[in-house]
Amino acid sequence: CHGTRSQQLRGPSGPLRSARAKTSPGLRVAMVDSSEALKQLQDWGGAPPNSRFICSSSKSDAGVMAEIFSEVSNGRKSAEQMILIAPNCRSASDSSAMQRLAQHVKLSCDGANVQNLEGAPQAAVSFMTVPAAAEPASELTKEQVMGQVLDWFQSMMVNLTDEEDFIEIGRILLSVQQYAVCPATDPLRFQAAFWKEVATLVEGTEGNTMMVAPNFMLEDAEAFDQFVHRQLEAPLALFASEGKQLRISTYHPEGPKASPWPIIQIYFFDPAPAKEQDFGDVDFESEMEWGKTTKEELLLAKARALAKEEEEAAAKMPASIPLEVDPFKGFGNKPESSAGNKSEKGNKPDKGNAPEK
Image (cartoon, rainbow, N blue to C red; front, side, top):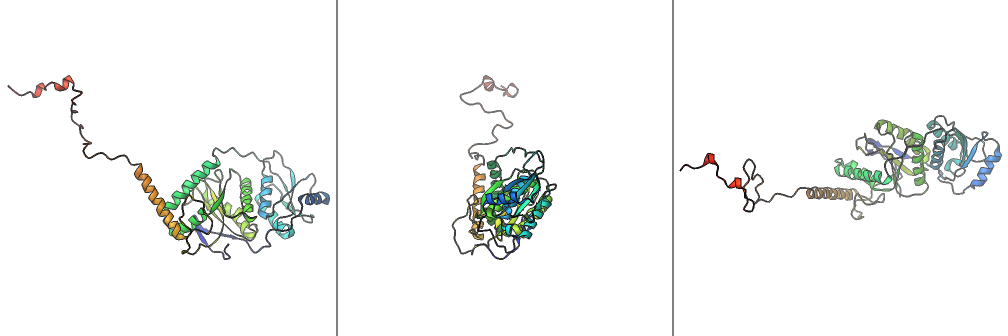
């Protein structure tokens, strides 16, 4: 079960801020048929002229925002007037809530002219697409990215000296059940990917998400943190978490934990279980379920990881020199001739040192 009280946690660059939403009516149960909603908007007559209509099937505000950001930044060569109908999202039945959603997207999308369509028969948002170049192809595969991230995570956990950081960061990272590699370089595409992950969580997926961005804001950790707080964390706390206990933590290559790339953790807050509960051994490379890792188990896992590192280091040491072999034999002296390889020069006496007769 999820916690009902917000508390501050320490993160990689200060306290992890709570992203807990206020009490909300939650996801809608009765679904509006998409084709009927589309027909109602087309027959309404209040939409901007020459609009192209899209009907969202998302049940969450996060899913609707993901679709708007994606459409705005999808790389069209010229601007296009769009109407996105959202009959089944949480804010669909509340005009002021829909206005709040549209306002956030508008402030995030320069030139898109995002507007909530007041008086429409169904919740809908109008906007203009923004001409944008296609994203460059990534040189890294998803598997390569996550392989480096997992190596970093294990190294970081083994070397953490602050016990509080070790416990909290370990429980969050070990609880990841899905991850996403976002190749975006611009903020609009990045936000589209983030809200898609949030929508997956609030619409029913269990477990936490790790989002890795190998091409986004790599040089400035402070600017990355400010972007996350303003564009992602604030609306998540205000309305987009659908009343669930969602929080965010971040890591950056230029930050204290020096992650290989910018990383965002989207996770459900849940207090640690009582220490007497036993869930078996914990391994840093295992898939963990949130809420089932205690402080004692993490410390044991760290001890095992350190022991493993010592064993691997010992295995890489060169073989020792046998005691019966003199390692300095022959240095500064002529090598002794062997019985099977005597040279003629080696058998001649040294005239300068020959004994007198």
